[in-house]
Image (cartoon, rainbow, N blue to C red; front, side, top):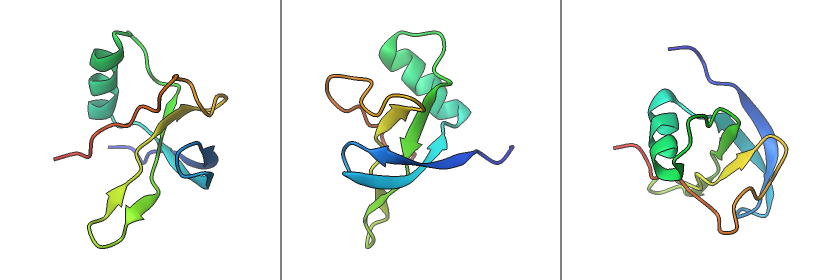
Amino acid sequence: MATLRTKKYPCSTCDAEQLHRQLTRAEQEQLKERLGRTGVSEFWICENVLDPATGRQCRNLRTGWVMKPFPKPIRLPAPE
């Protein structure tokens, strides 16, 4: 698998600039189903670690241009 691109973007839920990455194929498929869209390549996911003990991440979604693309934040669940 190719290395995913990462960038620093402001995160609306972390309230700071955090590292975001592009979605994996599995995450894209999950988001397509959830939103009922055919394309979701513009979304980035926040990788900020909220709990160092468990490694739980923020996983809030944004686009490259819009920090809050949804009325309420949408987070993808952690991979199993």
